[in-house]
Length: 137
Image 1 (cartoon, helix red, strand yellow):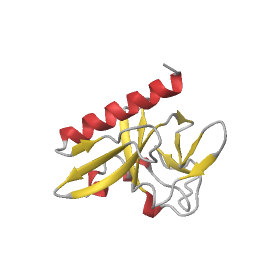
Image 2: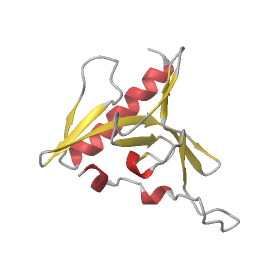
Image 3: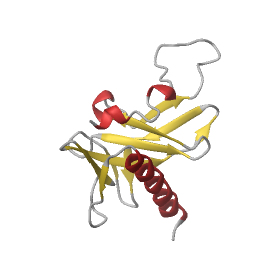
Image 4: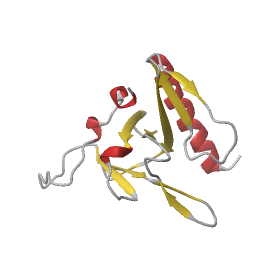
């Protein structure tokens, strides 16, 4: 198994565990050509979720909002997914980011701590998205 595929499997397993623990039904699409990794359902509401394995670098988690293969790069849209679930192994947390809150970006940066220079404009704190299951309802 390729390392990238293994990381994706780990992220999907961790996200699935958290969702099941919170009472969500988790559905997996058949095949590899789907834009989303899983679908969650609770109370008759379904959400398509793209899971990402992300790393912490210099206090920032950079969440890619695109998929790439050897031939192309495709950015996610609201036609494809509803939520990105970003699993960060360094802190063992999942950040649920609704795609409708993101406008025309190829990535979404989450800071674990406020900026050292106290900048607030364009700074998104990770805690605002940490285990936000309400984004899935």
